[in-house]
Length: 347
Image (cartoon, rainbow, N blue to C red):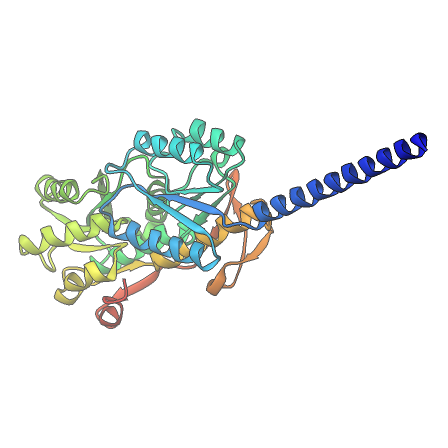
């Protein structure tokens, strides 16, 4: 009888232990499932605060991330420096975000911090201003850099009648997108049809309004015969537009570049700038938000030929970009007196 009691007791204990183990496994699977299906945290770091283009881009990013049921963390330093962005990257690593999207103030200086982020399991991509290929999985580009650069030269050439001195008012000297566009501008200028056009200087306003104003004034003083200014930066073109307006140089010094319709409408309507170009920065940020989530979910790895759906923008394909890869939004759009009215209240 005693032996039978012992057998029953052991059996009961074994059943209890098995039940406990089974319950533990079930709970573990449930927790793992919640983690994998939980909200992701996608961070974006723009170049600096107070940049209207950047604000619209970050708005688009936030819209895309939240549309997918995730959390958006939006950051930008006071000054457009790599050091300030590195500090923000370190903070995001400690917060264990799922992805970091960054408009780089320096394509190389951010690499150690971003390598640390990727080694921590964080997906990294760049937008607007590219990182070097080793620092990212993919770059989200506004448009084909060659088309942008060549289009800007073609535009200013038409405005000045194919001859005269021109200057470029860029953002920072380290901005990869600006530098790539400028290289294509110079390449376009090699065509014999531009033999009467002289590029006298590339100035840098650092995407700061006051400095861009000062640089524009310096160009006008140093080159009194200047016929045209190309500003491939929304901050720079608006600053140049103000200077030309204040100095009464409408029609004497032509202005084109990349600008926000809301900021450039008055200069286009007054004739200070006959036309300028851009894309929708909200769409650029929106595409980056979908790209970040696709990377985190494993839908893409950043390899050439991969495709994914970027919300309302439809299917996008990853293409080669030097040593890395990129996704392109589309061609630059021309804004002039005929259409600026319908766009100036949009962005």
